[in-house]
Length: 134
Image 1 (cartoon, rainbow, N blue to C red):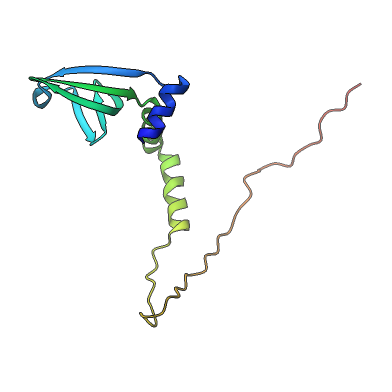
Image 2 (cartoon, rainbow, N blue to C red):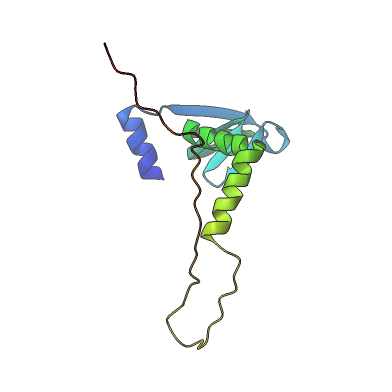
């Protein structure tokens, strides 16, 4: 990740953001997502360096707009019942709930079940030829 951040700052596609936050434990707008990722005032940041100066913590970071957009899209899919249903259906096709029993537990071969899926056409009417030019 550090290499990606360095490459992004060198190429100019991302800029360094410096956040100075007083008393992290009592700031309701601050949340540590992972060791190298924070959320502050609703925005995600990848932390490059973190320094302490008394009660103030200084974060040298990059705004992670790409991940914010990804999370927003995932939240939109979760709110759309049709897309959520489609997603769950695809997961059930890809990973069927079948117990795989090993005939011989020492064997290094695993037999997966064969999956057959019927596909139906979504075109409801016949297509007509394009209009002829005069």
